[in-house]
Amino acid sequence: MDFEAVFDAVPGACALLWPDMTYAAVNRAYERVSGRSRRELIGKNVFEIFPGGPSGRGVHELRASLERVLLEQEPDVMAFQRYDVEMLGSPGVFEERYWSIINTPLIGPCGKVQLIILRAEEATAFIHQLRKARSELTMQPPDSAAAQLNAIEAEIFARARDLQEVNQRLRRAQSKERQTTEALRQAMEQQRELVADTSHDLRNPITGLQTLLQDALDDPGADVRQILLAALRDAERLGDIVADLLELARLEAGALPAPKPVDLSWLAENELARLDCEHTVDMQLERDVVVDGTKTQLARLLNNLLANAARHAHSSITVLVRAERERAVLEVIDDGPGIPAAERESVFKRFYRRTDARRTDPGGTGLGLPIARQIAHAHGGTLHIGDQPEGTRMILRLPLHQA
Image 1 (tube, rainbow, N blue to C red):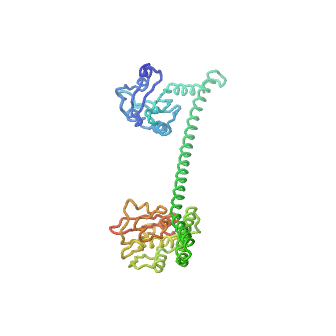
Image 2 (spheres, rainbow, N blue to C red):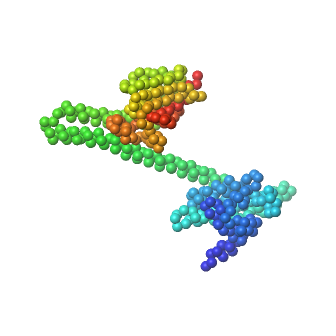
Image 3 (tube, rainbow, N blue to C red):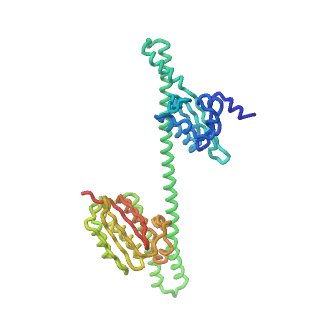
């Protein structure tokens, strides 16, 4: 069977579009209703040939329909759509045209849409008849056969438009459902990663405890005090991990007390006074930089940043606080080895620890910076790593208190 001849002889106007929405083929009926030859269409983008007139009516709907076919790999029906066509020989002059369009995917061997079959049924004459019938309807008795027929036709057209609106609402609902499903999938994936990471970090101290207890049982002459001290360190590490996980869970649940004004400079000065650090600390604190928040949570955020800086600094730490437009800005800068740009987001992931961090602080949990960022987000702010010639520059931005 010659399918090319069959396609060309189909009485309905049909076109084949590539996924980039350029014409691959058209049949004779399509040439006739579009007023364009194959030579003018093949290889050209459908919206380049038919821009839809000055109003652009129908262009958005057709593009959305074609994109749905590509995404969902399902046919899409467009009922009675206005799409104006430029008149031949009159550039810039568009003729009002109405169409009923069905777009159908043609799936290739790879499982993706290889072509889109666009079938267009022109309804312009029908719409004009309805308009004429409505104008004549007012001059005829309401119980006449002609009036009843016109009313039925008008009702059919109205229901077709209603159907199209319902289809659009269904598509929006489906799109929202897909977004919700994707969000749930990502949440489940994050949950699985969290369980895996938590299990990995809990395994080391648990294994250490088991080894210590087994050694104590196998060696009656072992130093019990040393074993208990080592077991205590492993138990404390377990406690730190569990406490940090609980803190993250509370923050993600939005469990924060009612915010109160907090002077960020005063808080930084107080926390720096408590910092047990052998490095030189330079404070550049602008006064009366007040934010709305929870003092204990903001203190925890600052302590995590200071502890991170103290762990990596070679000799000095700088803390800056200033007001910048409608934001309070706090920066903690160290002169350590710095963090490569490719890892700047990774350090805010749970349990992520760089090689140097594991070496300088083997007892760390890898949750300090994730908790700090979560606190910043809970207070309507941001926390990120900025550019710095040497070392690391942590930048916290929070909304200023509005008196």
